[in-house]
Length: 290
Image (cartoon, rainbow, N blue to C red):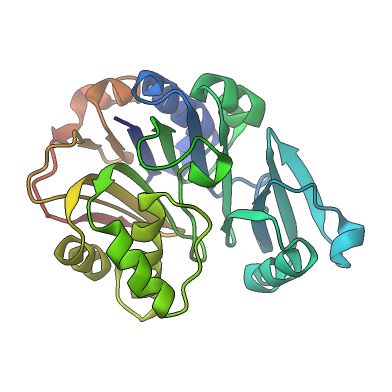
């Protein structure tokens, strides 16, 4: 039992409130998973300044001297954000070369991933999440079932540029798909079944498929019970398995689209009383684009 939340803002006037709203949503799901948590924030000018590449790093203490680049490094709880002018992919290569043991939590322009072990409310305070701004945020509270409680096991899994995935449920055949992906050259950071799904989707997107096609292919390939939220810089998508036994609620207004494992995560959003609210149908991909 984990908790998923996501908020996609359509109205720029709400961008300054992204962190405030996302924090309330995340903490409301704290009792669905209190051992660890994580968020992906899109568009915050401090966490991931526009025009700069950003890499989210755990388990090392990166410095500009070690990287040999003109970078800025900021700490948010146990997560370090490394930013620099230019491509996130080039910056990622430099971080991995300088720190081969680093855990890369995410990379991409306009995206910062923050995660750690502990109660979601404690982590949100350590990150200063309530002050974040932007147009989109995704969060996850974890109750570990498939792997250890470590930073590597926390969601979101952000393994492609500006991409992330959060997951409630379990994939029954993840070991088989992991072997197939490894045989194709894909590397893994954890034993978590969620990472298999995230890397499968990243491979689909890298091959040129859109997110709807990638998620339909995942539904055809993976067995298990799951609700997934997948995002990148400009899109936000939700899908459930064929039985749809894992809870999910979507709400939509002219100002925002939001998703939560339970309605109470959405109850404090502005204008929710006038929102269209529904439970996503099995294996139907719901997607929104900026």
